[in-house]
Length: 401
Image (cartoon, rainbow, N blue to C red; front, side, top):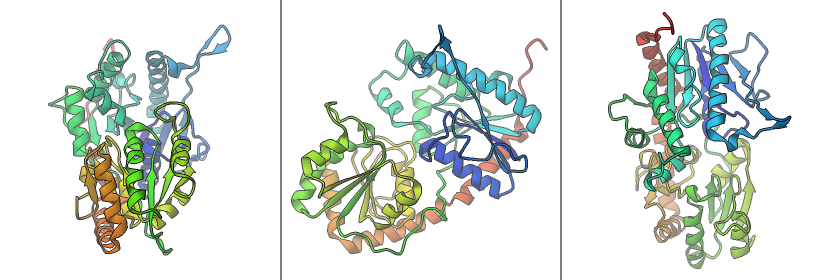
């Protein structure tokens, strides 16, 4: 099968980009040929070897005004229009030249919107999402005029027109149906896949009182909730250490970053900012931390929790979105209400104090990930869904025909 993935940027191994890379490698291992269309990241994968099972194709979106580059990201409707048209042009050529069988795009990127009306092969939209959608929906501004309204309408059409829609969790699928008013649209749930050759338990001993946070240091990831919980945790367990891995963001008051604020409040003896680390170093921290906290206010999937679980690291997370499906509360991990600093502190204290409890959770979590989220199994599920979409596909009529 010739499979084409669309992803706006491909420069890191986080989020959607990490998903595309791991799926590309898993599917290539199973004998499929993978094409990746993106604006960045050609140095990550081979782009010129015709025998390679994974081939990168760069798409360029450039615009200037009186000789000066225009930063299109600041003008969202203009960028989406130009990006979508550039992708559509590249896809038309790829489908003809490379015998592409199916194309997969992200929901939030709306990568395939311009290609969908003239598609000659089926298009899958993968529901990855991001927490901002849920926040905007809860505040009633998801489709507010003008910018959000444009985004909402185009994204709705992008999903509605797709030949196959897959989501990372039942919770996020149901949210998309409600938020984009698509109650009748079929959406299949194919979970996040975890590669056991990458994420696995280590041999080094775990730290005694180390709490690991992985993700952007921003409000949607629950950094504010954790910040409020830390004083109570340190009061009960003075030797606790908190490690933060992820891109730093401005503190709520805007004068400093979150890492600077936390170090200023509690000192470097309690706060360690690791930066945006690569997978090998992240793996080491998953393997040696006492526990991992995922206090997000909303998570469509829950990849951080699953990666930690695959490494035998106990997880305490918010009961939201896909996290509530990835974790069985009291069995494979612990769940607390989102935004509840007191409950978060209580849960962290209980886990730090009870080593036997942590070991039981970690072992059951490891088994659950192996049984339900193994990357090769998820890749086969994905291919089965692709094959059905290809079998039932009927290309729209060409204009003028």
